[in-house]
Amino acid sequence: MSRLRSWRAARAAPLAGAMLAALLGASAPGAPRAQMQAPAPTRAEVRAVEVVRGLEHPWSLAFLPDGGMLITERPGRLRLLDGQGKLSAPLAGVPKVHAEGQGGLLDVALSPDFRDDRLVYLSYAEADAKGERSGTAVGRGRLADDARGLEDFQVIFRQEPKLSSGQHYGSRLVFGRDGMLYVSLGENNRRPTAQDLDKLQGKIVRLEPDGSVPADNPFVGRAGARPEIWTYGMRNPQGMALNPWTGELWEHEHGARGGDEINIIRPGLNYGWPLATHGVNYSGFAIPEAKGETVPGTQAPLYWWKKSPAVSGMAFYDSDRHPAWRGSLFIGALAEQVLIRLQLDDGRVVAEERLLHDLGARVRDVRQGPDGDVYVLTDAGDGALLRLAPAGKGEGK
Image (cartoon, rainbow, N blue to C red):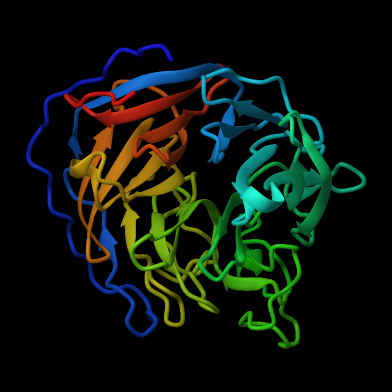
C-alpha cells in the first residue's frame, strides 16, 4: 500500500451542536424529533492512505473473511482486492448491466452465512427487452473457490415496472438482524411512483435471502400493493446501514435541490416523497406534487440538509481503534466532495464535521473495515480506495 499525502486543516471551531428543528410531519410513536443540519459544520484533520487506484467509477465494497474485499465498478465489473493489496482482473459470472446515466453495477453484499455458502449479492441496473427503460435488479452467485468468478448467478428480484431512463436506481443491500435482505430502490425520477403501492419505485423492500417474500411484510395480502414493500415514499436512497447499537435500519437519500435526509426505517411507513420535502426542483421551482415540508401521515426525517451534499454510502463506526470516532455515522458526499462525520448521542445527531475537504473527490461509498479503520471509494474514472484514520495516529499497519 502506498502512502498518500495527508489532508490537514486546522479546526475552524469546536464541533458545533446540531440545531433542533420543529417536529416535521406525523411521526410514528417513539420516533425522534427531526433535526436540520448543524449550522456550522467544522473541518477536521484526517490521514489518508491510498490502498489501490485505477478503479473505474467504483460504487461499493464488501470485506471478505480472508482479509480481501470485493469492489464493484459501475461499468459492470466486480474486482477482488486480496489481503496483499493486489487487484484482480474482472471476475467472471457477473450479470450484464445497463451502464447508462446513473446505472450500472451498484452494491455488493455477502451472505450472512458466507463462510459456509460463499454467496455474493449484487444490485445493478437492468434494461428491459427493448433497451428503452431500466430498473434495479438483485441477484446472487457463489464465489468460486479460486475467487476468479461467481458461479450459478441467479436473479432473485426485479424492480417492477421498469421505468428509468438512466436516473435514480438507489440501491443498497443490507441484511438485517432478522436475516432478511433489505434493498433500497430509487423512484427512477418518476416522482409520483414513490407513493404508488402497486409499483416498486421509491421503496425499500424486504426479502428472504432467496428473494421470496416474507409472510410478515406489512403489505402482504393487501389488494393493489406489492408484498415486497417494507416502506415507501423514498426518492433516491443511496445509503443504508444497520445501527450496531440498536439493530435499527437507517437510510439516507438524495433530495432534489436541497432536502437530502436521513431516516430511521420502520415497517409500513410513508417517508413522504414527493408529497413532503425540504427541497425544490433543480430549476428552483417547487416540486409539483409537494404539499409542504410537513405532511400529515408521512414520516419526518431524523436529520436533513438545507443544501444537498448529494449523499452516498453510509457506515456506523463501532470500534475502539479510533476512540475519537466511536459513536459516529460516516456519509459520503458526491457534490460537496467530502466525507461527512456525524457524531451521535442516543440516536441524535449532536455535531457534524467534514473530512477529506482538500481531496476534491466525489465520495461514493464508506465502510468500517474489520481492522477498525474507515475505507472510502472515490467516484472517478481513475477512482481510488482510501484507508482513513484521525490525523496524528499511527497507521497500525
